Amino acid sequence: MRSDANIAGPMTDPVPGPRTESSFGEDVSRETPPPMDDTPIGRAAQLAVEALGRAGEGLPRPEHTRVIVVANQKGGVGKTTTTVNLAASLALHGGRVLVVDLDPQGNASTALGIDHHAEVPSIYDVLVDSRPLAEVVQPVPDVEGLFCAPATIDLAGAEIELVSLVARESRLQRAIQAYEQPLDYILIDCPPSLGLLTVNALVAGAEVLIPIQCEYYALEGLGQLLRNVDLVRGHLNPELHVSTILLTMYDGRTRLASQVAEEVRTHFGEEVLRTSIPRSVRISEAPSYGQTVLTYDPGSSGALSYLEAARELALKGVGVSYDAPHAHVGAQNNPSMVEGTQ
Ligand SMILES: Nc1ncnc2c1ncn2[C@@H]1O[C@H](COP(=O)(O)OP(=O)(O)O)[C@@H](O)[C@H]1O
Ligand SMILES: [Mg+2]
Image (cartoon, rainbow, N blue to C red; front, side, top):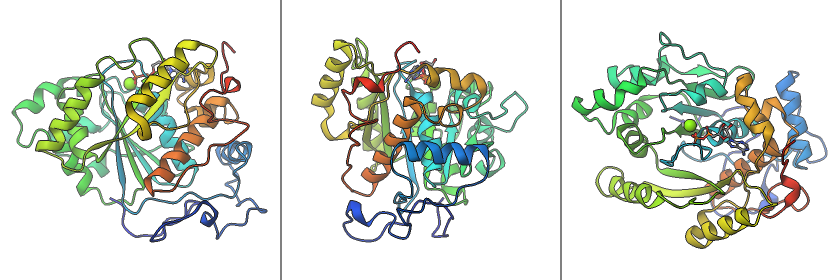
C-alpha cells in the first residue's frame, strides 16, 4: 500500500483543505514543460499531454491508495480497455499504478504486454495459494510507474476452488493490504460475471467504476450489479460505493449514443464522468500490439480521452471540480471526438 514516501513524478501531493484549480502544479512552471524521459514513451506522453494543452500541470495524488474495481457483468462493454488505458494515463500523469487482472482471459495482461502463459506466477497463486502479491507483480514495459498482476488461464478454475477456502471473499483484500510497495491507484479488471472473483474485487476496493457502452440495453443487468454492491457493502465492505460511471464507445454521430448518455446521466447524475470515450479504431487495435492506446497512438482521440478521463478521476478523488476542455476532448456531445471508421 502507499506509504508517505515521496515518489518522483509530476503528480503533486494533496494539500489539506479545499483546493482550487489554480493551486495545481504550483511547483511546476507552466511556461517550462517538465523534463521528460528521453524514451519513446516519454516523448509520446509529452506529446499527448501537450495536445491536451496541459503540459506542466501536475495532478493531485490521492492521500491513500485508491482501489478501483472496474466492473460490469456484461462482456464487451470496455472494462479491460478502460482498466488498462486509465491505468496507463494515471501513470503518465505521474502516478504509481497497479493493474490487477482478475479475468481468466488475461486480456488486461495481454494489452499491457505482460507475459501470462500458464507457468507465470499470477493472481491465481495469490488468491488460491496465498502467494504474496509482490511475487507476481511485473513492471509494464515502457510505462514508468505502471505495474500488472497478471492472470493466467488457471484463474478459470479459481471460481470453484475458492468456494472451499477460508475467507474466500476477502483473499484479494488481504493480499492487497499486505502489499507494501507505495501505490496511488490499484485498478482491478473484473471478469464478466458476478461470481467469487468479482466479489473478491468488491471486497478489496472502496470504489466501483462501471463502464457503460453507449448501446441499446446499456442499463440492462446493471440492477444486479448494484444489488451486489449493496450486499457487499452491507456485509463485507462498508466503504464500497459506485464512484464513477464512464461512457464508452461513444459515437457522437448517432442519436442513440446521445439518448443512452442522457439516460445514464439522469439515472446516475454526479457519478458519470463528463469525459466520455469515443469509439476509436486505434483503441481496439492497440491490444494486439501488447500496448495501450497511450503508447500505440498518443495523439489519437482515444488516447486523449482516456488521459482526460484519468484527470477527471484524479480531481474527483480529491474533491476538486473539473473544468472540461473546450475545443478538444471530453465534451460529451462533441462529434470531433469520434474517429468513425478511420
Ligand atoms: N472506445 C472503443 N472504441 C473501439 N473499440 C473499443 C473501445 N473500447 C473497447 N473496444 C473494443 O471492444 C471490445 C470489448 O472491449 P473490452 O474492453 O475487452 O470489454 P470487456 O472487458 O468489458 O469485455 C474489444 O475488442 C475492444 O478492443
Ligand atoms: Mg475484459
